[in-house]
Picture 1 (cartoon, rainbow, N blue to C red):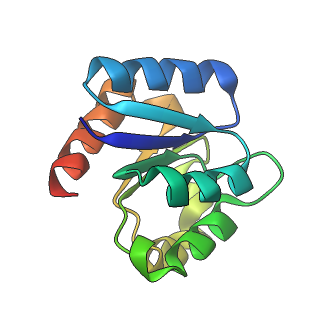
Picture 2: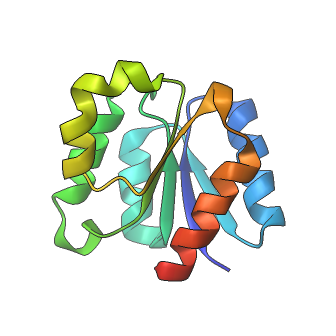
Length: 126
């Protein structure tokens, strides 16, 4: 069982994602607030993070830069499950590559099963 940190602004979507992760055998921790999420990474040591770039109060990109600034979290797998369309990310391509994003799923075109599949693959590697 892997520990997965979910960072999601929408409570209903977060609950569905947590349920799907638990059914897949993972322990899921959810935060809306990015400061609480950073603290959770430190305290809970997740093996994978699933997050949206659109978050309450702060930029998901800023969170990722802060996360990657700590040497112990530089290789922590991150799955983006975002409502930003791929064409909206064109200007962010290099930043996302620099931030070592492990997988990207566009919410309107991805199923929870696809997200869980990415988590399963990454959790095995962690």
